[in-house]
Length: 373
Image (cartoon, rainbow, N blue to C red; front, side):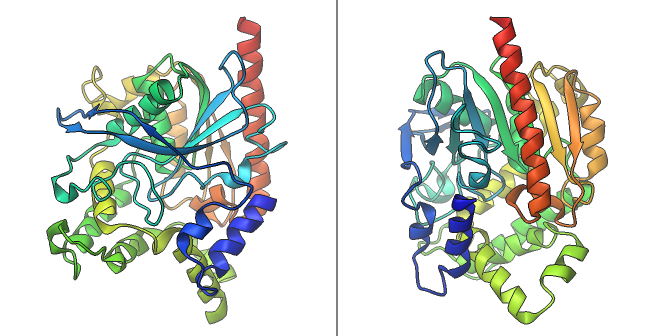
């Protein structure tokens, strides 16, 4: 829990103490931040992102056979730190056994540290080509295969939208990974979610300082306002009432979530991300003609879905329906009033259950690979 404690201390007290956000990004026992220069990335639209850069950190050691690598895909507006509390010796992502790659997605939206290519840090602003969900997955594949020289992954683990992208990766690259672990994420978007996305896009477009997206100074308040619509659904009503029952409790929470999520976003990069996710649909993968059921049925990898029955972002029925369509899939339900946020230790008991499920699944993948030799 040492790394998690440091993360929470940093986020909770960093602003009050006047600590810069960048100081919160990496503490002394974190692995070094790295950058892969990957050349041009051709998008599904036919446009090209020149000079793609992907930022990442790695934990543990790649073995001689290069068959113990796990890729982590963060959630919407997140960063490569979002699963730190599960990484380390003896934890779910055991650094004594596995080589864990934690990257920042194409179009990474957080500010104050050098990260993967985005509309803003490329200097192209609104001239940056609109990318999509599969483009984000293709960039991750390019990082692993070309940047790190790894041809096959043991597993891909993704949280929330990162879980959706782990499923897409298993469809787009069917022989690339042994197993996927979507955490509170799936390929079936909720109807409520498809209503929220255009609302949040509109909020950015009409916000003071937006200037058609061609601003020079980031209007951070615009990004905070748009994300706040989504944040309401991260937790259940019961969680809000139980944990933020006083003005002081709310202020502590607001400072913490502001420092690692709400107040550290670039509005333009967030706008592009909203557009990419709103238009993302698994069935549109080339070769499936819009048929999501066929796309899911094509997955060769084992799949472990971990979901929250009280999740207000990803409806649990969507998960159970989806699992039934994948040949080698199962699901673990972790019931908690933390809802969608069970992934980041909002409920320590949920974290323990999640850790156990991930450990067991990774042990199965490792045993299966050993038996196949």
